[in-house]
Image 1 (cartoon, helix red, strand yellow):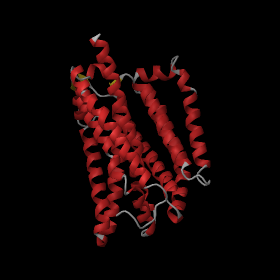
Image 2 (tube, one colour):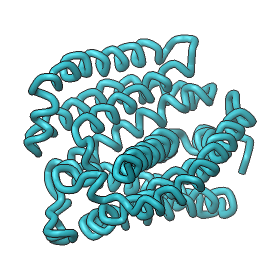
Image 3 (cartoon, rainbow, N blue to C red):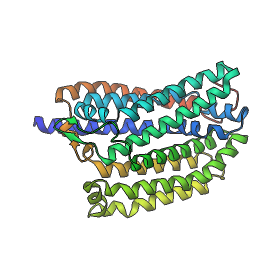
Image 4 (tube, helix red, strand yellow):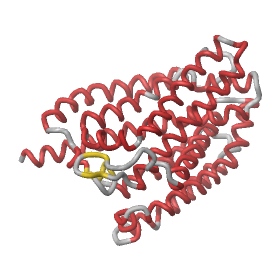
Length: 337
């Protein structure tokens, strides 16, 4: 009975962390995407409008990153102890990128004499953070060497052609989220430029997603079995059709009158990618090495933390929804700074 309860709690915690990571990717993804596109907007009103579009929400979006990382450490300490040493370099790079981006975000308004430098820092921090997140994902997918209960690989094991591919793919997808978000939230020249960017970012994202998806089944035997052996074939057939369909309607909706539609369909591309990722690795938390049950904290610890998460997650969702509601509508170049 205790084993069954513990197993159920472990699954619940796995979904809590997956939800937190997904929420972070969706919400902070368009922030980082706008940073990637920032140099291509005209200096002045267009850049100010793009920045103001995310000004009310960008820092709150990172709450989900804290929840995901903290939840991993507390609920799956063994996985945390293995993953962190394996991915120190990309994770440190990601955090440094987020710091530079945050500092640049504030200082570009307070220090107009050096605004060009802060704009560069905003773009550089966004690019570094996005690329590092993609590399981290790729390193997890390609496998981490584990002996006993510890990481057994080297400092540079994460750096492979596949992780570089996933890094570029995440940057492309984030840029698409940023462009479609600006279509939804802005008018005038900023929206026109965002539409122009989105028209080539939609096919670029599909190509990047296809490249990563084509390479992934050959990284681990379990990936191949999940996608090319029945019943995995039931997901293999419709998934590409759903991706291409979402991309097609996103692309055709870019110039339409429903400005929010391309953004929603771009989010759907990420949702489908996350579902595919889940199909590939479940129930492992370190793919091919450690399952969620092997890595789980004791039952009493999971229960204690779940009580706190059950209180805090609805609060976070409520204030996040309230923030987006308060700052709904189109954004101008004058605003929240």
